[in-house]
Image 1 (cartoon, rainbow, N blue to C red):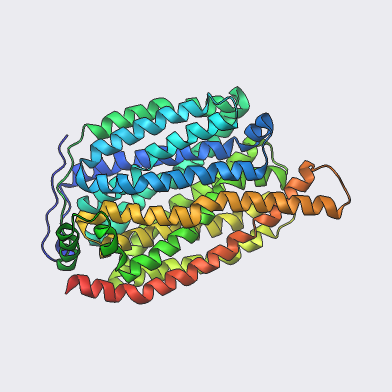
Image 2: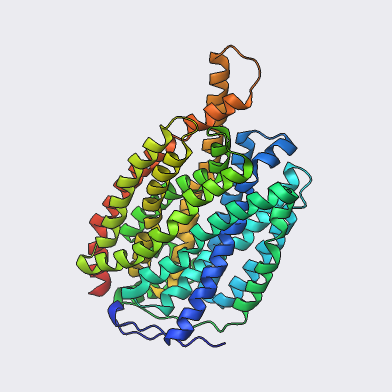
Length: 454
C-alpha cells in the first residue's frame, strides 16, 4: 500500500493531509501498534504479585525492574529517533514491533529475576522505535489544525492497551498462570509488524520557514553528531515540555506499575478484581479524555496560541486534588476510590492531546523523529525511569516503619499495604508541579510560534 505524500507551503495552516482513506488507514494501524505497545508494557504490572511471590522479590526490586527498562528504552530511543528521520519509518516500526513481541514471549519463559530482567530489556529495545517513528508519520499525514485530534486517536492505544492488558492479563494469570499472560501477546505483534513494514513511507514535509531554518542549521553542521540536538534545545518551549514530560512520566510509570498491587493490598481485592479495577481507573477513563481532549486542544489552539498548554495546565491542577482525596479514602471504599482516581487520571490523559501536538508545532518536520526521541529520552531518564523505583523504595521504607512502630519483627502483607498506601501520596504532589510547569510553557510558546511563522 502506498501512502500519498502530504504537501505544504511555508505556513503550517496550509498543510494538507493525504487522501482521507489512506491517512485514516495508516492512523488505525498506528493506533493498533500503540495499543499493543502499552498492552505488552502493562503485563508485568498485572502479574506483579504472583511474580513477586514466586521469585521472592521486594517492591524495590519490582521498581528497579521498571527503572532499568525505562533507562534502556530512553538510551536506545535517541539513535532510533535519528533513524526515524533518515530511513523508512514504516520499516523501522516493523522491526521494532517484531522485536518487542518476541521478547514479550521470552518474559513468560523467565526462570528467575535476572532472566526476566533481560527479557524486559529486549521489550524496551523494540518499543523505543514506536513513538519517534509513529509521531513523525502522523505529523506528515495531518496538518497542524487537525494534528491534536489525530495524535489523540493514536494515543487512545495507551488507555485501551492498559485496560485490555490489566483485565486480560489478570484473568489469564488467574486461569493459566502468569507466564501465559506474556505468551498471548506474541502473535498479534508479529501480524502488526508485517502489516506496517509493507507500507510505503510518506514524504516528509517542512511546516514553516523557521522550521526549515532549524533543519538547515542541523544539515550545515551535519559533521557534528550533536548539532540537531543543540538546535532543538534552543527552543524554550521544548525545554519546558521536556521537564513536564519527566514529571508526567514519573507518575505514569509509578501508578501503572503499582496500582493493581495497591488495590489488592490496601483495598483487599483479589488478583483479577484488582486488575479489572485498575484497568477501568487507569485505562478506560483515558478513552473519553483523549476523544474529548483532542478536539478541545485543537479548538483552544484557535482561541489563542498558548491555548493547548493552558488547557493541559488546568487539567493537571484539577487532577491533583482528585487523586489526593481518592488516596485519603478508607480501605474497602473501592467504588469512591475508582470514581475520584478515575476523574484525576482522566485529567492526566489530557496531557497527551495538549502537549504532543505542541511539540510538532514548534519543531521542523525533518527533525520530528529526533525531537520526539530527545523528549522521550529526558522524560524517561529524569522521570519515568525512577517513578517505579522511587515508589517501590518508599513503599518498602514506609512498610518497615509501620512494622517497627508496632514492635513487630516480620514484614507482613498488612505492613506492605500500609507502606504502599503512604508512598502513593507522592503522586498528587507531582501532578501539582506538572500544572505549574505546563503553565510556564504556555508563557513561551506564543513567542516560539510567532518566530516559526514569521
